[in-house]
Structures are given as structure tokens and as C-alpha cells.
Length: 278
Ligand SMILES: [Zn+2]
Image (cartoon, rainbow, N blue to C red; front, side, top):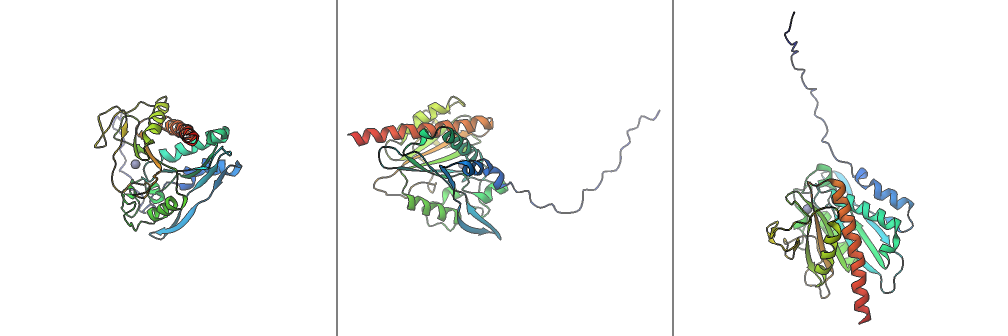
């Protein structure tokens, strides 16, 4: 009996260079696009045109106009995937918008400007940085040449948001946390948002997160050059950055983002109502 294993010589790999695998922008945005197609409240409005190494890009943008509220319309900008390897935020936004479609009253009084994919080339490549090699989230308000940053800065100027929310996923954190800046009540919005998101994931309770002092998952310092309102505004918007633990199950991160965003809308509307009655 011949027990020798018949080892064939290894077959040479085919000798062509496969095209680099790019992730599909369309697939990431498919759910939002579908929602926009069937919605009377959500409009798809991509903007800006730029080129990186011969490929053309624009930045995806969706506008959700909630039912009319009592006072002035509140404008909020929500930004995700400025780090290309953090698609969790874009997916969280899809989930959030689906929740608004089911229950538009959640967005009563709001006009939401939604930017689910701020770094398309980084997303395609699966990298934190854009294809230029730059971390776009360190480039804001320093006269950056990065086209994505210039386009987003123009949006932030033009719409004069009452609130700016950015979504990130952190592969070093084992829990939810957030940064606050801008208006004094930012912290009063982040705290209930984290509490609501804790239905799905634990909070990072460490005294130091990402190199900053933290209390109950709240950090009030941040890196220079992050996506935020221009410095020195007289009436700065509230600014909140939400971070999910990237190694946690994806659906839990998505639900956390959606729950946190819904809570911020509810809490801020309430704060504004109180302010207008004083
Ligand atoms: Zn990030």
C-alpha cells in the first residue's frame, strides 16, 4: 500500500497584477440612497468635485428636513467616516435615518445635513488617511490643501450649524466615549446620549482615553485640526464627537450611534424650548 501523500509541486500563482481591491462607495451608501429615493423628507445632494490620482470624487451629502417645529429651524451637521477605515459611522447614519423615516417627529424642528462619507478615497483603500497620505481630521482651519477638508469647511461656514456631530470608531477603546467642545451645554447633550447608547455597548470608564483625561467617557479636550466649527465664533455650535469601540459587534455600534443621535435631537430641542421661554 502506498501511503505516501501525493504532493504535487505548488502551482505558480497566475502572473498578472490584480487591480487594487477598492471598497465600493455605492454599496456603503446603498441604504441611504434607497431611503432617499422613497422619502419625501430625505434628499440626496452630493457636492463638490475633486480628483485624486486621476479618479474623480464628490462628497456624499443628504439633507433631512423634519416636520416644522415651534421656533426657528435648527440646523445640525453630522459627519462620519472622515477616517476611511471607520465605516461604522456611515452605517450608523443609515440606521438613524431609517429610524427618522419611521418616526419623523424625532426630527421635528430640525434640518439635518448628513455627511456619511467624508473621506471616500480612504474608505476605498481601507485606510484611516486619505489617499494623499493626510489624516483629514488634523487639517481643519489651517488653510489645508486637502480638497475634502476645503469642501467641508465651506459647508460648515455656509450652513452655520447650531450643532456639529462627528462619528468615529476607535479600535483601541473597549467602550463608548465622546468629546465635547463648543457651546457650554455640549456636555449636557453627550451625557444622555451615552446613557442611551449604553443599552447596546458599555461605556469606557477609564480616567484616560486616547491620551486625554476622561470622566465617565467624556473628554473635553481634543486634537488640533479636527473637524469642528471655525475657531473664535461668538456663538459657537454645540460640538460632540461620538466614538464606538470598533472591535465590538458592528450591529451594536450601529445601534449605539442611532440611539445617541436620536437622544441628542430630543435633548437639544428641549434645551432650546427652555431657552426660548426664558
Ligand atoms: Zn476616527
